[in-house]
Length: 511
Image (cartoon, rainbow, N blue to C red; front, top):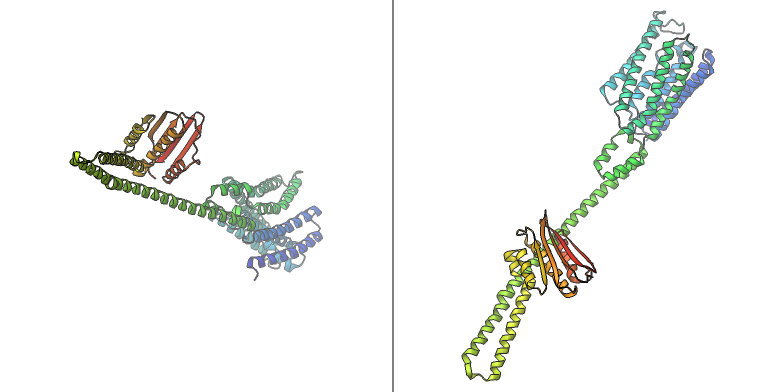
């Protein structure tokens, strides 16, 4: 089913073409119009019809095409006043200035196709009422014998003068509104309105100057001819605005960089720029890309947060398991071994000289082996998670580690309060692993450890002056620590070279 606006446009174009042919024949046969005047007026009418048709095809949802074509039809209706037939002439008298209100309506509604402010609606309504009302009055007082409805012939001059003054006032109001809209509009709107404003101002200046100089002045006729030429170009200005109403590449790039669906939605509603069917399609596609990108980004951030939370839970669970294992070793196996040592020593003392020397030597060796096992078990428990770390905190635990390790360790500590257990454990194990690597591989007898709280981060740096070569991907120790640090939202960096190696961990205090 054909859209009602398309049906109206088809009817306007058919009527306009028929009226255009009739108007051309009437003007050519009337004899008082020059060939240039006839050609310009006819061309102007057909250009309005052509511009309206293109505007409707390009922007079918916008009524601006119908208004442009209606201006062409109104221009041809005005020329019916040159008909010799009394009936046609009587019909044409009220329409002698029919194009004026239509063009005023077109200018104020361009390019979005509707009147937006109350003042615009009042101005257009006044234009239709004054022009058509004056036309009806002129019909009743016209002294032309072809006027079949003249009641008081001879008073037409007064009606023509009133119509001229009213049309001048309305034209001035339209020009003021047009200028205000151009000055207050944004760059895309100015770009669309510029051709219409330029031709409107130039036409107003030439027409006003020609009228002011009077018919006797030698410049009057050239100025009026210039006005006719400019008026002929006016439909092309409207057509240029319609054709330029599309999404510009720079504007599209800016919108995509903003990645903001609300910005796109606001511009879709800006009829001055985006009410073009192809632009709407492009903008809808761009908006879809932006919104899809936002949705995918939000989903990715949510999943990333879930992964980080899961890794943090794993670290916390691992630390809790370390603490449980350290307690079990200390309270279980270690205590049992100590009890066995005490029992063996008690048995050796009570037996005294009754035991053969070889059995006494076996008991003494068993006690020594058990003592060594207790020492190793204690070191194992301390490596899993030293009790001092839980009881006293990070700094005392690192000091204890530095005292036990067989190399010189220079410890520099800022103001470090008690921190979250997972943060303290991670920082301790980074320090322990870095010092162990320096002891095993760096071929150096000195290392520097720096621990400080900077803002909302804990920074731990271990530097040695060894041969370098440490690589976070080279073994499971540093790689595992990096995963542990990243699970808390931090970063582990290893910078090594011939002059030594620095292991740096930055851990957020609130993960």
